[in-house]
Every structure is written in structure tokens, then in C-alpha cells.
Length: 111
Ligand code: 5GP
Ligand code: ZN
Image (tube, rainbow, N blue to C red; front, side, top):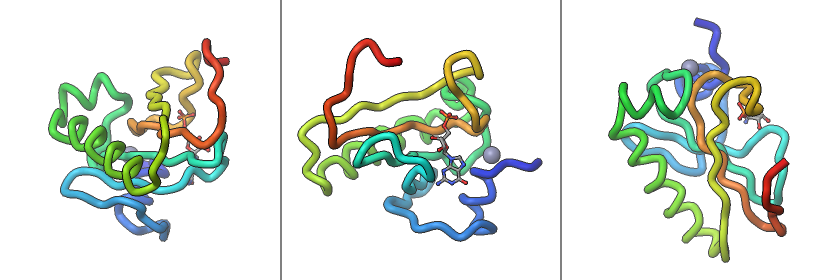
């Protein structure tokens, strides 16, 4: 399978991990949309968050644990967490990942 996030998880593409736990890693987004834009990614390959919840529920829990840890480390006042599911919703990498965004005013509703 030619999955960019599987390659990052395995180390085939070298990356700096901001968090690494049993089932999850986190790294900076290549094209940040906010001063803090971190991707929190399960080590197991599932196409989206809903599939992850069925296939590796422990990883889904660890993703939010990692979000909290990263927010605490950075003393973020608030942050937004986003899972895009499907191309129509903006998903471009089909390996589940949580966006952690912070550091600027975040509008609502999102674009
Ligand atoms: P999606 O559009 O699927 O919700 O989010 C995919 C995210 O992955 C995008 O924000 C994009 O900038 C980021 N991205 C794509 N390829 C790479 C990569 O090779 N390295 C990193 N660090 N981020 C990537
Ligand atoms: Zn993958």
C-alpha cells in the first residue's frame, strides 16, 4: 500500500514526532493552517475515524489523550480538533488523522 502516513509512522519517511505512544504518533502538518497545526495519527492503517473506531478503538482514545498532552505542553488556551472524512469534506490523506489547530482565532462555521 502506498500510504504516506504509514511511511511516516514506520520511519521510511523521517519525521520529528512531537508525541509517540503505543498506538499513536503526532507530527507537524506540512502545510500548516494555524500557528499550531499538528496531525495525530494512529500507527494502524484505517481510512477514516469511523473505521478506526471499529478497527482500533484504543488508538482513537489515545489520539485524544495525545491532543490533551500536546495542548498542555504548549499551554494552548483553546484548540480545535478535526477529522475530515471523505474528499467532499476535505480529506486528502486516507489514513485516519486528527488535526489539532490552535494559535489564532478560528472562525465558526468552518470553511
Ligand atoms: P486531510 O486533508 O486529509 O484532512 O489532511 C491531510 C493533511 O496532511 C493536510 O493538512 C496536509 O497538509 C498534510 N500532509 C500531506 N502530506 C504530508 C506529509 O508528507 N507530511 C506531513 N507532515 N503532512 C502532510
Ligand atoms: Zn496508512
